[in-house]
Amino acid sequence: MAKLYFRYGAMNSGKSTALLQAAYNYEERGQRVLLAKPVIDTRGDASIVSRLGMVREADFVIGADEHLRSRFADERDQLQLRTGQDAACLLVDEAQFLTVEQVDDLLRIAVLDDVPVLAYGIRTDFQTRAFEGSGRLLEVAHSLEELKTICRCGRKAIFNGRKINGEFVFSGDQVAIDGDDVTYESLCASCYLQESNGVLEP
Ligand SMILES: [Zn+2]
Image (tube, rainbow, N blue to C red; front, side, top):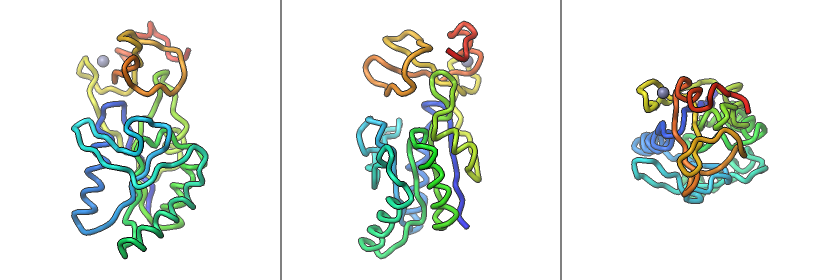
C-alpha cells in the first residue's frame, strides 16, 4: 500500500523547489511521475515555479470541482500509452487549494490505486486559518513533514502575513494571489501578533 504525504510550510519555504527535486529524484532512477496543481493558482498557469528559478509544466491542472481520482486514472493511462511506464508517484503543488473531496481522492489514489502521493502546500491563510485542502491533508495524510523558513527576526516562520501596497492587512478574501499590490511575508507567531495587535481571528 502506498502512502499520502503532506509537506507543508509557510510561504517561501521552498515547497515548489522540494517538489521539483522529488520529481528529479524519481526520474534520475528512470521512473516516471505525474505533476498536478489546482487551477486556482494563476501564477504561470500550469507552470510549477520555484523561487530558485526552476520552472516546469504540470502534467495536468485540476479543475475546481473535478473528480480527482478519475482524472488521475486517465492521466496515468495516457502516460502508460505514451511511455510504456506506470506513474511512480503523483506530485501535487499548491495542495492547499484542493477541496476536501479532492484530498480524499488523494488518499484513495495512494491506498486503493497504490500510487504514492506527495502533496505540497501552505498550512494556513493570512488570517491563520487552515485552507480547505490543507486542513483535510493534516487530518488524513499518513506522513506530515514541515518545510521550514525563517521569519525576519530569525525565529521559525509559521504564519503568512498579507501586505497590500506594503502595509499588513488582516481582513479580506482568503485567496489573493501575490502580484503587484498584494505580497506576503512569512512570520513567526510573535511578529504576526505584533503586526496584528494581538488579533488572530478577524
Ligand atoms: Zn518573527
